[in-house]
Length: 350
Image 1 (cartoon, rainbow, N blue to C red):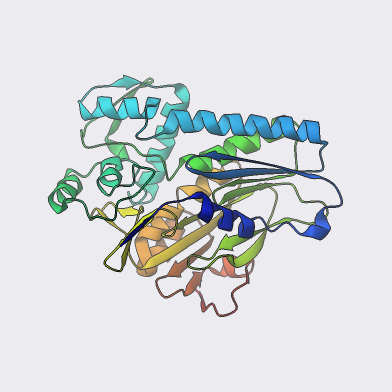
Image 2 (tube, rainbow, N blue to C red):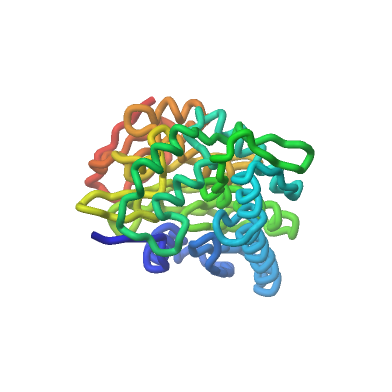
């Protein structure tokens, strides 16, 4: 048996394949800065600015990432963990206007997904051992899992009174791990544009947003192969587009030859099986958020339900890799992908 986390080794492999910056496109300088935030390696690449200006802009993004990490951590001391402690006691807690807005938005996305994207199941994630930096290869108590499923915590249980938040259900424990990276991408894009930086690529452990271009060509990124080093496919990202991937290869453990990942199906309380990865592309003012959170209901819906889930989440450009490595893609997504692994079986599903 073995346990696996989103470790630096995996991240290096992911980033080295994800940020496919063509060497011939480096006529002008590309400034790159890395840090370790949100439990993953993050990277900001800024094209065409002098080093001092690029360094200052990248530093402001890294500071914002750290601020959000500190505010939204689900189990280490944070405003969010304080809120969870209050909700478990049936009490209300005042939160910042930003956190209140995040919770309301996450609630709307959860309802849109039919509650398959459900940040209220933090206690289920904890029971499975994923509220930790190291994972133990062991199953949780089945009765405890079943009890939380019966309690049916949902984001719609939250009650907002100005900036005071309470819950009608004490089982609600909020984990924004499926939302925060996308939100952070949107914040980074705003900060960079405010500073006059119009050409950049922001990468948070595989959640990526493109601003402008990389010289006279689009930023080109790779989609991590869920079972091999390197990309399964590459694509060009246009200005303001974001790509989000949910996979079973980042945070998981294996026991008796079976893989258990951190993507929990709230309907039964168990990690989703039968899917290796889901990738979606979004554009617009909230492309980061909308490429992150909606990938979860597609993953949890599985091979039989992912296409309907994509329609529900308005994800026209999407791909699901099933347990056999088959790539199921929407027509719009197929037009944009160049498969690096030529052995990949591709099934287009309009």
